[in-house]
Image (cartoon, rainbow, N blue to C red; front, top):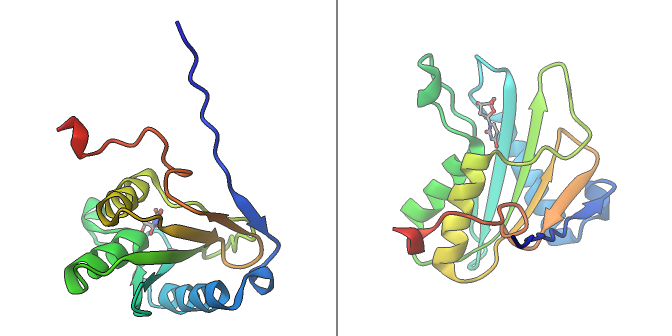
Amino acid sequence: MKKLELHTVVHLYDDIDELDQDSRDLMKEAIVARSNAYAPYSKFTVGCAIKLDDGTIIHGNNQENAAYPSGLCAERVAIFAAGANHPGKAIVKMAITASGIDNKFTKPVPPCGACRQSIAEYEMRQQQPLECYFMGASGNIAHVNSHKELLPLAFDKKYL
Ligand code: THU
């Protein structure tokens, strides 16, 4: 038996003011995106802003449904919109913010596993890293240079 140890690097920022201008602006876009979430059932709102290599900004937010599993997370709403409307454009970075109605998290809220899998697909497809910043409603922000940091041992097309 051999042991495989995986090493993940996450950068932590105190708050939005510690980010560089470009990333701060993108997180502000994510906050705007979160304000448009449709989350009447969970009352947990998530906003995602994506920046493409041509500077285009795309918003996504969680879209819920009375048939609960029919809803979709903010990250996938955003990344699928990018894939659908801007084919061939690389995604440079994404910013995510999440907040409960009562619990306005000030610690980073990471993307769910299904979203990590979807994001990893786009990163592999574009063959260049896709940076991700994520926070709660405000406060501390986490940053990874690539989704490999968030989803090691990802399933991908080589297994098909
Ligand atoms: N949600 C997201 O939008 N992104 C995630 O990464 C985790 C969860 C949404 C889905 C649902 O509308 C609500 O948050 C509660 O799970």
